[in-house]
Length: 307
Image (tube, rainbow, N blue to C red):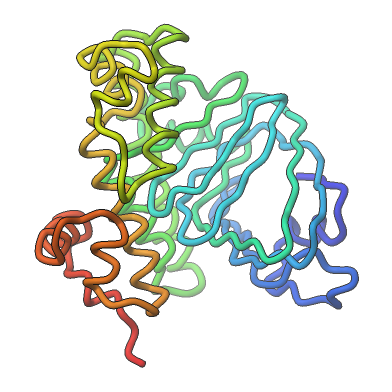
């Protein structure tokens, strides 16, 4: 990636620590870009942006698969808005050709993300190893997808981020996790293309409006009936369109997003479990604890750091 802001060339050369004088640096934190095999890299960042600064450049043909653990990132790619602000949700960004992008970092904004990056020439060998056809929708144009309930993909990315090895063994471990993630993405994309009818542009826009309404009021959202009346569609059609667009029901989506936000609040260690439960919209701490354990495999209290 070639950008027009200070030090961005160093970022993509694999600099480990970015802590240059605040008058010239655009961010403070860590960035990693480590080779696993030719054209395949583990990648991620933990950034706090120091200034309001516009950035523009060119994304090369490639795919990035990753997961946000804090903050957000947003960019405009060839006129399309790409926003990643959903904690713990695996995300795919695939570009079949070089594309121009623009973004604007804000002072104090954070972005913590990890995953892997594959240059265009590196994808075919990965697919050959898995005996898979080319990924649907990733050969041309722009593909942006977030995988709501892809637990095996989420597990592969978590394992990749927590690689316990060093040296050659670390590369082998990372390669295995990347192959597992690519396999899960291929299965998901193939299933979405063959099992679900294509949504019309109108129905997809309606589903995205529902998503935006839920995201803006997670703790106290409007009812499905209220949403349907505001959008101007019946509830059955609304539910069906949302499920086709996001692969999950409206109710399950709302619950999972509340739990994602709760996880971030727990790790900040500033509120009690009960306070967080009520803040994200659960009726009781008991209901919250049960839902949290089902989603993440452990109770919410285990996220709290010892003070």
